[in-house]
Amino acid sequence: MFPDDFRRCFPDKKIFISSEHNWSFAAWELHKREGLIRPNATLIHVDAHLDDIWDGLEVEGLHDIKTEEDVFEVTEKLKIENFIWPAVGTGTIDKVIYVSQQDYGDDPFDFEEWDFSYPQLKPVKDILDNNKYIGLRYWNLEEFFTKKDSEEVNVLTENKDIILDLDLDYFNINENNLVQDNLMEEQKIIENLTTLRDLYPWSLITVAISPFYCGGDDNALYLLGLFCKVFGVNPEESMSW
Image (cartoon, rainbow, N blue to C red; front, side):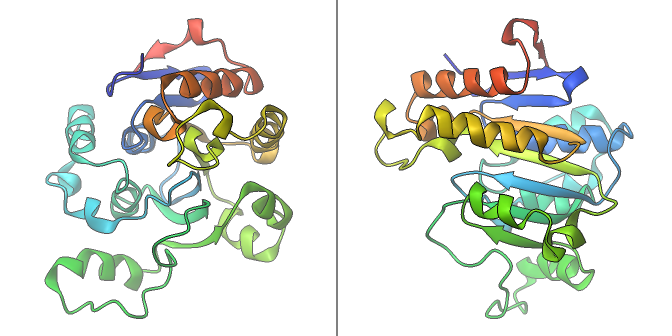
């Protein structure tokens, strides 16, 4: 139902949807290059997973992008968990707010024990030395919503273009139990989506369907339907991108 190359958009609503999450990088990069978002935007990443793997910075061609074709070629080389760092590397994003229930791995902003003497980590060190990749991590949307107007969040969002990056698998309570009944209650999903929709005047919205991590195509189709309903878009009016 959702092939890996499934991509639809609603340009007038600034909503770009893809089956696989690495394509969010392409949407961000193209919008920056077309002048539709300013460089050094703030990303709000809502996902069951942090997707904070740095090795996307090593993808061939990342720093030689000149055309739309180049953007697509680089994106095809990215994975579903390493597409955020490359966008920092190209200057599209420099602040990140993670909202994720992922309970394994390190704090995404804790580099105290990293050994930057390794040559392969030079791109990461250069970014950090330039005060890029600054941000916060929250464990769920409710926690983030309560902090939305706090000073710690305002420092990251004031006078910035703000991108919402949503993975629908956020609404799967336990990705290891891939059944319909494992999704959050529908009313809670609708409430979270409604609050997200109205949270900021979003400069761009990217949505990953991630069917496998939602629990299969049926769950993914159901969640995408709720998203479209809350965000006021008709799937039949979407365009390929």
